[in-house]
Image 1 (cartoon, rainbow, N blue to C red):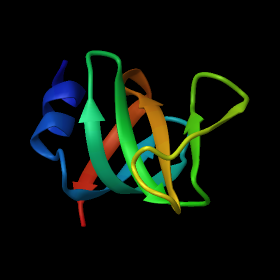
Image 2 (image 1 turned 30 degrees about the horizontal axis):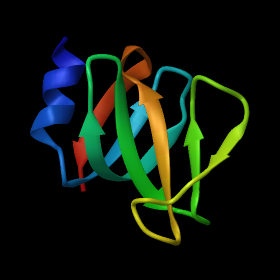
Image 3 (image 1 turned 45 degrees about the horizontal axis):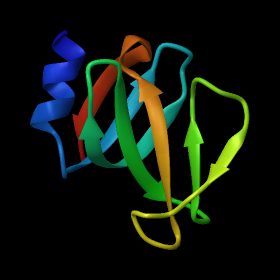
Image 4 (image 1 turned 30 degrees about the vertical axis):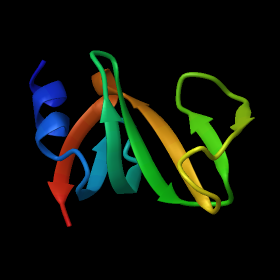
Length: 81
């Protein structure tokens, strides 16, 4: 639950997120729910999710951005940048 409240506090702010598998992601938190955080990153207009292997084409957040869905369970650290 702590990760949820940390992400909620950082909503609409630029952050760097480190996950338990050692990956780092930078972007703006656009949404948070009880299970996931949605991170707007620089990308090619695709939506990706960490829970499923495929890519989903989308872009209702704007062309040229990528929405990355990260499970709150996998978050290790979050920092404002």
